[in-house]
Length: 405
Image (cartoon, rainbow, N blue to C red; front, side, top):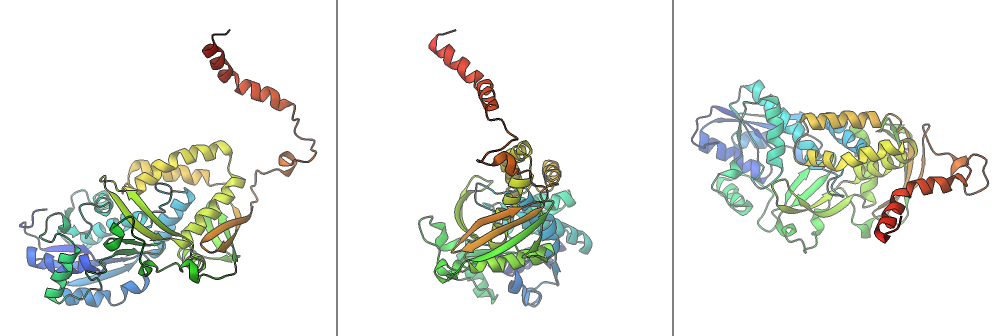
């Protein structure tokens, strides 16, 4: 959006970090407009302390901190777990799942306070700009969007640090430690700084939710996670709501160093990016959920669902949560989860969550059919015809290649 365009009021997606702290004052100086700061509480914990006061001290006319953690957990995190949605084999998408909810609420708040535009701190190189804006446009197709990183005079975070120091804006970022940190109920991500070198080991201060392996307990711990229709409902027999359950598993998994991932991923814009992620609780949920599915889901239904998961994960990662195809996929997943009820028992030790047992009232597993001992329900001689029929096309091809009839 043209920086010279006249605006009266904007709503800034405000985290209180380096980028949005600088952005708040920059907006006032550039547009001579009122800035309403909106912060979505999706489980950042102590990061939210004093945020309203900081925003107002930097020039905001008002600051809104809204707790939407329950909605995030129930309507975004758990449906993704039910789908086994993983991007490029290892990323559980903690940031990807939170952004659509924040982007939607940003546009709704802008409507409520009579703002001309919404503002976000995502860079022009990343995924978050797409996620925020697609979600905002799904609520208000005419909303104006300001993304300062696309056209302001600052070329990097070191410039922002200098600007904040010049203007007296408090920030915890330094030139030596310019990490971009995103935290929510589901995960913590670290990007930037030394992590931009894929060969460099992550520094010790990139641990918030997980204990370094050298400091984890020397004795294993068992945890039982219960599911109903694909949704986790209890930990060690104690019923919990979605957000409470994820917090509990974050603590349990985190103290054993579980859920730490260091990866280079493919951003939607085509750039490869290195990030370090901590997702202890949801890592446990994925392992437990898969275990119960293995007992209770029909083979062909599972194969069909699994064939759609890479596409579904890509939709989420790229910001299409509110697209019709993504909504359809969630309906399909919900249908497949009807029998996925039961318990999974995991042993946690030194960064690993090892499955020790699973049970389900809807189990399709049959001892009498699966046993290697004598049985009376399966005639092994029938396997010969089954194999020969399934081998027919292979035999025909071999005959053709050999020039035989």
